[in-house]
Structures are given as C-alpha cells and as structure tokens.
Length: 343
Ligand code: MN
Ligand code: MN
Image 1 (cartoon, protein in one colour):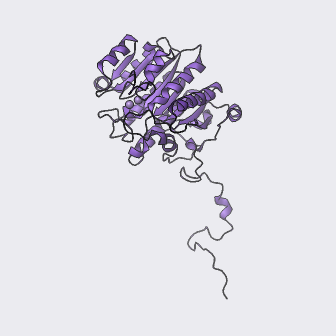
Image 2: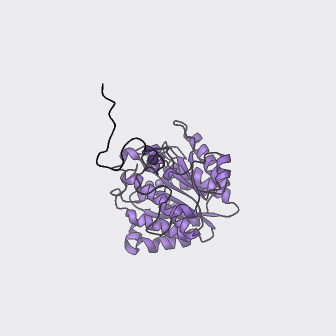
Image 3: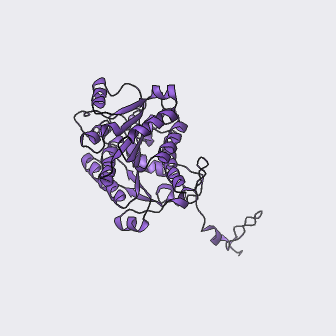
C-alpha cells in the first residue's frame, strides 16, 4: 500500500503544506474574502462603533428605487458600487491625480445601509434620514450610495439639519433638474427631491446650483418655478461652449454665495450614457467620465464638504460594471480630495 501522495509544486519554491501559513495574512483582492464594505473599510454601523471610530467620512448605503419613473434597479446600486473592481490594496490606496494616500490622512468607515425594506417608500425615506443624521451627528461626512435620486431629499435634509446654524448649499450634477411638483401624485419620487428641499427650507434657492441639464424634462413651468426660487443652473450646452472647469468654478461661487458648506449630489446620468449606461433614465449627450472626476476634485478641494451622494446607478442596466466603477471612483475622488486638503 503506497502513501497518500503530496501536492508538490515541483517547479516552484512554494512546496509542501508547511508554508501555507505565510499565505493567510495577505491583503486579499477586492473580490475575495468579501465582507461587503466599501474599499473593505472597517464597519461602524451603530452609535457605539461610530463614536469609537471618530471617522472623518462614513459611507452609507441607501438601497431604494421605488421612486423611479422609468427603469428600476438602483436598489442594487450600493452593493454594486461597494463591489466595483479595484486594483490596489484596500488600505494603501494612492491617487495618481492628487499624489495622496487617502487613508493615511483620513479615517473612513462604512456605516452600512439604511435599513430600507421594499414596498414601504415613505418608511425608506425616514430611515435614510435617520441613518444619515446618525453618521453626521458623530462628526463624519456622510457619503451616501444610492439608490434613486429620491434619497437626496432625506439625506441632504439630514446634513442641513446637522449643520444648522451653518447653512448648506447644494451642487447637483444631473441631466435632470428633479424639481417636479409631483410624479403621478407622489411628492417624494426621484423627480421631486430638489423641490422638497427648497420648499421645506433645507437649502436656499440661490444656493441650489445644477450642472449638466439637458434633454426634454422638466417642462417650461417647472423652470419658471426654479427661476422664481432663485435656482441657478448650467446646461450641458454651456459646458460644451465654455468647458466644464470654468462652469464648475462659477457653480461653486454661486452655491457658496450665502452658504457656508456644500452638499454634493451626483446623479450618474449626468455622464453620457455611453460612459454610464447602467442608469434608469439615460439622456444622450452628457459629461465625459473624466470631466466628472475632475469636477469632484475641483469642488471638494474648494469647499467645505458637508455631505455627498452618488445616485441612480442601476446594475441590471449596467454593462461590464462601467457605471458602478465610475460611481466608485467618484467617491474615491472625493475622499482623496478631502485627504489632500488634510495632508
Ligand atoms: Mn436625478
Ligand atoms: Mn437624472
């Protein structure tokens, strides 16, 4: 009877079973040993953990898509963005763009998802508000992963409420103004959040600045309402004429003209559907991915960021994960730009 055979890598120095221990303590790639947090960062999902972490930034998931008017799927956005492919060791990211290692200058945690359940849209908005409030009350800048754009209403309201008596302006990237009065009678759908934020006084109209608008919605009366409230907006045509950097520079000055801090809301459909196909309401002729990433660096470098969201990533409509990757990198650019200021 022969002995049980050994597994032998005859042509390698890695032979035998006894060296296995040296492999157990490596930084595994993003898809392995998956525990689900953004960048495999530490979880801090309750008050105790958030108090202990004293984080500068906390990721919050808002897996909600019952506000969509067209194609659903954004409820899977937080998972897809967290799972977006990376090539770097999760704890030693380094930005070529900003020559900065974000995690050496900032403490970033993943606060987990707001406890959204399906079929209860108003409950969802309530728990998203509570979750973002919780993070902000611990001094962390919330970066919220949507979810459809409805989530900006509870999220920006939470940030504005926590910043009080400081005032918060909004920089809003989108193909759409999202200032509709209602959507088939729903006041809280993804075409309405910006109107609710203004009507309830969470943001002053003149400090609400929109970038990238194009297409055929909303209608003329809605733009009249926006003009009445002092909204400012920069269309895609203006960006084509003047360049994104000049337009974003003006938008920053407008949003801060009377406000102290900024909430940045990025609807991924501001980017051309060719570069961000995984979204519910695509509109042709948008920003380049690189223009959006540059704009995020420009904004976060220039303002005091109070909160942020990246919304409308719909993985069922995505191709090769390109939209999820872009959303992930938008978050990375913001984190790294915050770190660069701290460095
Ligand atoms: Mn939107
Ligand atoms: Mn949109």
